[in-house]
Image 1 (cartoon, helix red, strand yellow):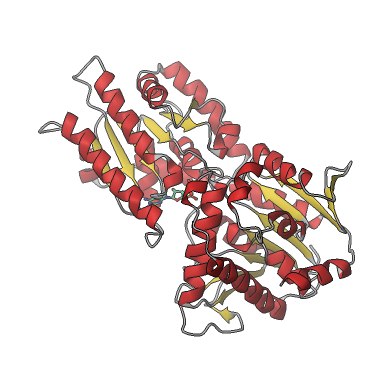
Image 2 (cartoon, protein in one colour; image 1 turned 60 degrees about the horizontal axis):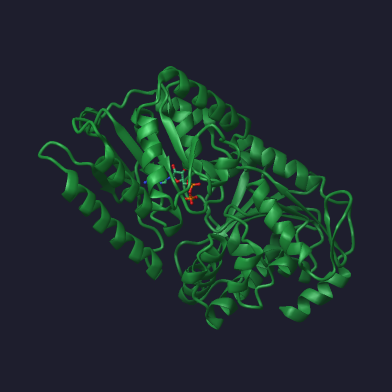
Length: 468
Ligand code: ADP
């Protein structure tokens, strides 16, 4: 790498040593390479500053924050990012809320952020942009004359061509993406959908080297399946659960689900499938419990409030129909749990239920596998719609819309002989190790560094400006 690395993501770690998959991985990467990490300031301001603000000391790299006003937060973050792009990418066009205000806010925040980045970036720096909050950021940076390498990684599913119709016409995903040198996606299916978009674009051409030629630009589109910090998770899971209160309260047959409370995670169907399984079981002396940990997120968006109510009602119903004085079939917890405790809960659970309708990767699937005891592993029941399903072919894969199939998979997982459990675990664990998070960031950055020789962006700048 000739210049420095600049990472841009919506969230930026505030702790000196951040915990948690992606944030930890990027922290480790920047600790090695040095550079800058730019993210949004969580405190909203009446007037957003026009310059990035230095936040705290960090080992070997700088952390800079851009400020947002309440209007920015409402339109850019809650509005366009989470009420338009998120549902479109997760195949929920019915939940899209179109508003000109949202579009304007999204473009404005991206433009202002580009202006602020230009004050700290040098021409040969390498900028790595993360996620759907910043689709147009490269276009804005090119318009301001940035000529260095620009990479993008989308953590959520790439939308199918048919679903893109739910976006407003000004959201020109192909042109936004074409301003990057490298577009990184989670899976091969995401790459196929992205190529489908470019194929449908007038003037886009697939080159022999696999890149896309779009006007003057050459864009590489590749999959880089994200992973977890395997060693840290294995270590955390192997410690004894020292809170004996928790350990005592856990049933022998524990089924676990851990997700943000998001409509893409398929939680109502998971509860229905668990209820169906209880209803169908022939041996009524068996009393498994589903422990669902699902802290609420984005509650200002109405679809997120709706899912919370639906789940409360469903868990009440399953418990009402099945519970006994000494048995609660569904335990539904609404808060964040310490990652070390989470790892140990995963290890205790006979079954991990990961059943999203759509998911970029789903790190919980990888965490559940990493946490298992190799001599007595539990079974992962995994939705075919999760990105992780492409790699973890030995999980029990299910259709998250099919309640019967999920209920049967649950029964099969709880009864699975040790030999089969070990075999399936070993295969999944091999993939989890092969695609750990350090491997992910290293391979991405290597590909970005090699993505192109210097080229002129002059035509491109004129086009981008006319749109800004
Ligand atoms: P998403 O990024 O859509 O939330 P992922 O499964 O890819 O889904 O990642 C979620 C991450 O958040 C995982 O690392 C998981 O362990 C963590 N997480 C989810 N729910 C909780 C919780 N209740 N407490 C602590 N960590 C959680």
